[in-house]
Amino acid sequence: MKQKTNWRKLELPASSYLIACDESVRERQKELLYETVGPVFFGNRKAVSREELDAFYLSRYGIDVKRDFCEGDDHYEEYQEAVQAIAEGMTVYGGEIVFEDGMLAELAEEVWERMETGEKKGFRRINTMLEE
Image (cartoon, rainbow, N blue to C red; front, side, top):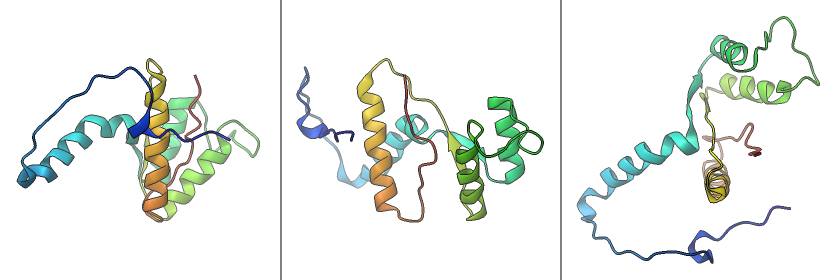
């Protein structure tokens, strides 16, 4: 079982900092943070419909899901989960985590876990098995 990282008590070389924030612009600061790291952790829109999802799987993996895709094939289960998410009115997003810094993958896992736990119906992990 993977052990959770406590980012506030991580024992790695660090450099401290101080910043000042105007609390009246705190929401805009959150928006800027999301604009900066959102694409890393939440990817880019890939599909809002099954047709878009099918096109994504063809371009990304070379899989024609209507002709040569069946249970047991690579990516089949994640495709089915994505189809279900779309059927529930969700949008499918995708991206990549660069492994230059291993902590980034761990941070992504923690963010996704918190989003899934906190958002019960608004966030779902489909394939977040980050591998180098």
